Length: 200
Length: 211
Image (cartoon, rainbow over all chains, first blue to last red; front, top):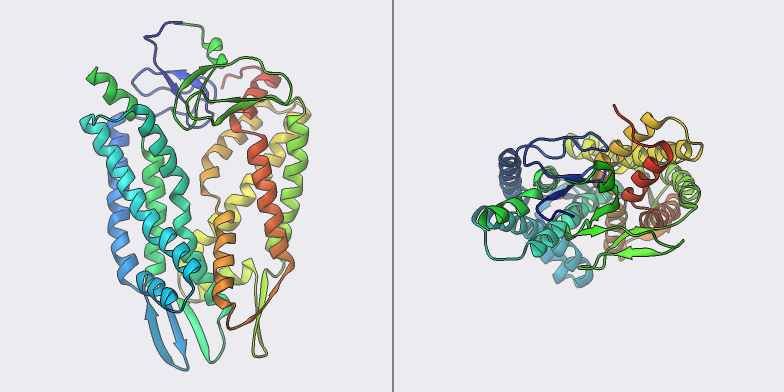
């Protein structure tokens, strides 16, 4: 087999294709394999910046508003975690901390690292970058846990004396997760390979 | 350059993107990636029949999960029940429209789309009909799959229940069990069949189709 030929995996049907370095259709499912690499790179940056911007209101605005006998009390994500920790629910505090603070931050850092590493040919193996990207895709949706918890509580705790409402932070947070997922989905794995190849 | 058809004998690992050449496997054996030990493909003669049975079961339990009460809580005589429908209604009443729309798509529309596309796809592949439709369904599935969050919703449910554990008496509903069944079946299906294998079967059954 000719070793010069590079192959690419279609991200829709997973078929092996020849990599032509330009816009091409998959031989099996006829979906565009990838767009122009530059467009993909900038799309990833754009979605990532949107997500990072949304991460700010997600943390500043309350994710949960509870009304106890007419008195409103609001809690942000961090506030909620601190409250849970102080009241002794350590496992839950940890789950929320990992799902809604660490996972989004880790995802931002991983995508930023991949973008910088592919642009400036940092000396790490291609294999590691592919694995990092795989992790980025896998952990993405798990940050939604906090939003779902808040809306489940808002249905269950809905009595005349005490009520819970989702706050503006929940919307920002849900959108943030949506945009980080888009950012990861628009990252072209060929970037990892191509920049490397130019360097050789 | 080698022939395009011969590319079918190659496979790229989904995790580390290492190129492998396929070999034919005996029945019920798996091929692992040489670098990261992820399952590349597996050989199973009755894969379509088996998966069809599992998907059918998953479809039934998913419908049940949407229909009935998930949990009922009881705080000093006051009762409140949770269903997927009431969740959506309450979010909308609270004017959290974006969250509401995201919720209905991630928890209801996408999972339903996936399970019923799988059902149609596998049935059509079993009776070896409609080559074009099956291909569109496979493409649709690839697009929708990352956006189903039933598993995450279930974990959130557990977290919410633990939070309420101290204050309320919690009673599990029919849907709670149905959700557990759906998730277990989903894990088994994902383990049993990969989309790479389904595409391979598709080529095997219908040959290559030009659009």
